[in-house]
Image (cartoon, rainbow, N blue to C red; front, side, top):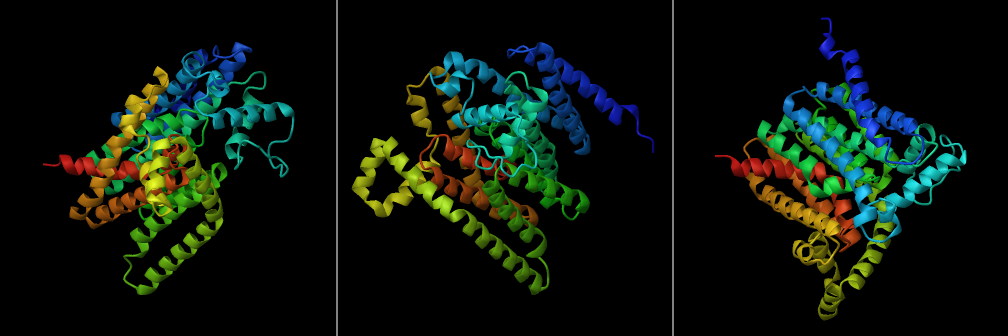
Length: 445
């Protein structure tokens, strides 16, 4: 059947070029340098984003609800990222990263080094000797350097990386939407997808030049790959290959943990229920081997980093240090774990004498966490009452993975109000799934 013009590639390309040109024009005036070059650079990435997202929207079935979800997801991250880059030099702290318009020192140093690398003339691709001091994995720094070299060689335009991050996050929305509709009822799927899009920490960490927007979007793509394995085998293989390879490129250790969680889900969905015992034991053996390999690769790093962060946590909280002196070292791990799980602490956010801009940010983040966490806990108990075995299995998997990762993040980063919640958001698709199902279950008549 011949494709209509409305649904053709030409229509999508035309709409994308128009959207890119219109949205790229304001970005052209954000930075010094030639405005036409900034317009072309921003317009190109925005047009590319529009084309990819329109195609993904159509692939996922279209519809007004999904369209608004994707518009909000992309617009929130790009708009907030650009807005904060303008607000921080005026209303932020007198620190170098914030005065340069960056939320995080990591993003500031990595992005600056990427632009310097772009201007250096050094070969970027297939260069074994290339290294970035500010990026332990190199993926995001290298990607940023490529963007700056080919699209913005005249002046540093950090908004270009914000556009790319917003694209990757939003690309995960239609995949998560379809994945959840394969297992949950429509209302639960809609609620969970909105939680994924609107969760404050998810916005906060993906509205900057960080790895989180890439990892979250790719994680949602990979989740669809597992859940759609039987119905859409070729597409699922392509999605898993692309998503997991890209995650390894951007953050190797994080990718290993996500891969392990998805491998467990795959076993539960397609192997554990097999009638033959051989399949069950073969799958279980593969999971054990994979878990041991991941532990060997990450344990040394995790132990050293967590010990140091625990020291920093105790130094940063006199009350917590006094409590530890009273309780003794045998209670160090439980106390640090509980303190880490409470971050960002809501009462502290309300009483914090911070600058108004940062007080508002921390307050919204705290409200988001203290709204989401109870839903995940509720799901852990309510899921046992779910009649559909496949749905129960998926929700319990999501709860176990989310809670286990919350514990890892709490032990890894202690009471750090930035790194601890940032690590935690890696499993935001799982948290959103569990919370969306829980809210739908609680509202059911």
